[in-house]
Image 1 (cartoon, helix red, strand yellow):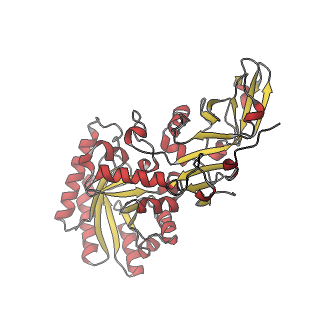
Image 2 (cartoon, rainbow, N blue to C red):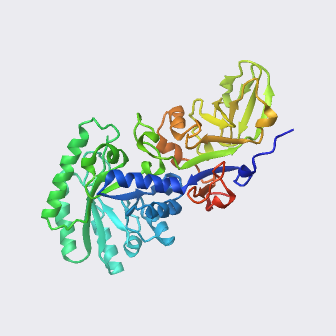
Image 3 (cartoon, rainbow, N blue to C red):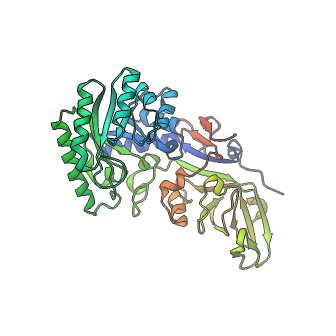
Amino acid sequence: MTSTPDPAVERLPERAAVVDLEAIRHNVRVVRTVAEPARVMAVVKADAYGHGAVPVARAALEAGAAWLGVAHIGEALTLRAAGIDAPTLAWLHTPDSNFSAAVGAGVDLGCSGWELGRIVDAAREQQRPARVHLKIDTGLGRNGVTPDRWEAVLDEATDYQDQGLLRVVGVFSHLAVADEPDRPETDVQLDVFRDAVALAEDAGCDLEVRHIANSPAIFSRPDTHFDLVRAGISIYGLSPFPDQSSSDLGLRPAMTLRTLVSQCKRVPAGQGVSYGLTYRTPGESALGLIPLGYADGVPRTSNGGPVRIGDRTYRVVGRVAMDQLVVDLGPDADVEALAGGEAVLFGTGDDGGPTADDWARAAGTINYEIVTRISPRVPRIHIDSAQHESETGFAPGAVATVAGGPA
């Protein structure tokens, strides 16, 4: 007979990414303390790294973040549609980006030079000046103005500024190797950045913010902080460093990916598991079926990813399939007790359970990818542990929002 699942677990969807908004607030407060007197931009691009952009943005602002950052204009407009009017920067564009909507919504625009004409057209259409942050490519080689064109772009931008069509309110860049603090390239990038800022100020730009620091630089390079730091992975409670954990930095992972065990069954020695039969049980054993797969964002390339069931952590065996994966529970498993129980793929790690870092190692990737790839098929459940606590951490009243799938 199958055991009765914990009542607290029954209040959640059968699959869920549970996001603790108090963890977000805590992490923002940590970053604020480290970065002071610089202000904090909470980066909520990619649906807040998979955590839910609108609730995360609100929590970050409540904790003292002064700015929000996104990649695309559409992401900024989603925040505005939700009634969030905090200063917001969008920095990655194409010729078809909706600059007019951004200017009309008061969204600051990152600019690599080529966008200036389109931004000015939008300002004319909206009959209000655009707010622009010019980006200098200090060495990462992605977007941004190359140093040899910086003065020409400044001339063009300040000419439009003199016409009242835009204001250059910021200069920014992005670091390439800040997660490796001893590498000299960061010093080179900083020299280029300081020169670019000086030239902008000499050209007549009254800068409100200068910003280059990402999460690793916030913690390892205080000389990069300037007026504003851009906190991405750190506000989600994950470490940007391969040799430092979340707890080492005083951060709390905000997301727990969990589901219920779909089936447990005893199998003979030599039982093949999943496509390709790349794993066979070494002896009589029991297998647990977990209803999450690569369509839910679990990396197919994972090698022995950890799953916590009860008070034990088991390893994924065989290939991760589209909708499911299998763990070997061992020959002594109580299949009736385990069936229907909660299975946690990653969470806070406080109880010794698996973390996003563990899955990153299993998949040969980084924790950023593990959390951002969780698909919309998995509902996001937002709780607030500061207001609601239970033995499981998931009290009925703690569920604040459900997004990304049916509850």
